[in-house]
Length: 308
Length: 253
Ligand SMILES: Nc1ncnc2c1ncn2[C@@H]1O[C@H](COP(=O)(O)OP(=O)(O)OP(=O)(O)O)[C@@H](O)[C@H]1O
Ligand SMILES: [Mg+2]
Image 1 (cartoon, protein in one colour):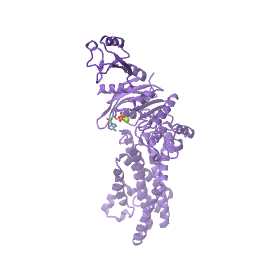
Image 2 (cartoon, chains in turn yellow, orange):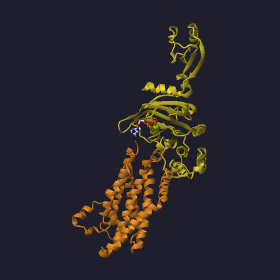
Image 3 (cartoon, chains in turn cyan, red):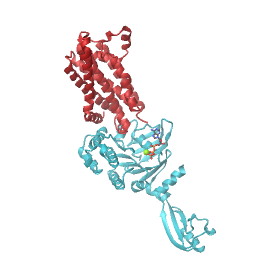
């Protein structure tokens, strides 16, 4: 089944000649939350802009809900809500008016009850008559979200929705995102906070230098790419790793008081049993053992490093 | 046709107009009143009659035109430049609206604003000058056509402009001279023959002349020619706008 958003061989060369997207292929599944991770300048915003019609692709095909975004833009764009990365709002406009405008612009009949629901959900209802310039940064960002939701989109793009938003509010936004997902809305968000992707995404895509390095189920990705590390603390510091244990992926801690053993949880054997046997044979006495699993962040950093 | 969208844009723009209604109306009314006083009363008392019309009355159509032209240009230019400048244009570009609908919304609003201002100025004129309009229907038609075509022109400038300086450049550098040399304050026949010929390349001449005809029943150039020229200008602006949207010129990166 084709995804609700389908991007094929998308290239974007900006006027100056800079190639911001180098042939991106992406299928976004209906109803999922997809997090796009990538360093600054990776091409995340460019990808979103191309899908939403803000920038014209140099080549490639984009479809939303089966509608080509260039030839059938009315049908495709009606499905899309976009929360841009930058806070762009008319400063003198009143909150409720701004949201009404968005709904009208997308060709939807006025529905005050629905707009009230959206504003309440985003804790903006008591600010409905305030002018945008009177709001705090976090509130403005929520107004952008309210505008994007005002026309009941089926696909919602959130370009760094939680940048500059405090922890409480971030959690609130995650709740909103989850509620939308429960309504069947497909959500694509870009973020620099890996915990955010870890917390709410179903799948994670990693972009660097205009290329989509991978798109993977979050859990699977963490399983597959995740490495475990074991920290083995010793009674007596060690000057060097004994010859008998040289074939293990071991690193001696700074003062020799501990060893770090890295192993692959997906490997056939973790090698833990034999490592412990060899430790005993070498006459080392253990003080403590801890294991830790790499986070999405470690995976991400590894991937982007490899790509560079 | 996404009528809701046209209406949304139109309303949004009109709300902005009414939010600053005092500024929008006071300054053009004040400056035109000054023209009436200085040119109509002070100088007019010396010139007395042009083509059999009192000078004070003679300059009214030109002055209304002058305001309507500049208002249309600046309103429409600013209307589309502002969202471009602050970035809210993203929403228009990502909405299911066609280019035509965007133009109708913005240009319609800008034309309405200058129409309102034009009518207010005309009303002010009645306070200063003894006037009656011979062809009210044609007067309104010329007014509407001018508002529309120069709002379209302003829309183009607003899209083209990359800075506030550029935004003011065209109205300042081109339009004001064209209007002053367009026969607002004098009859073309008062000029030396050579300059009469040159003047015929000035589109504003046709506007002012046609508009003046609707007041007094006489004009520098034939009304038919005036009408045709305005429509040609309107078509030209439409063609340029069509091209802008096809290519995304200065709208999309
Ligand atoms: N309008 C433009 N003209 C020229 N180059 C551009 C334009 N917009 C973006 N770029 C370039 O394209 C590249 C990708 O930019 P993009 O905004 O898509 O990155 P991003 O992944 O969203 O980064 P960030 O995390 O900082 O938001 C950058 O190198 C940027 O300089
Ligand atoms: Mg970005």
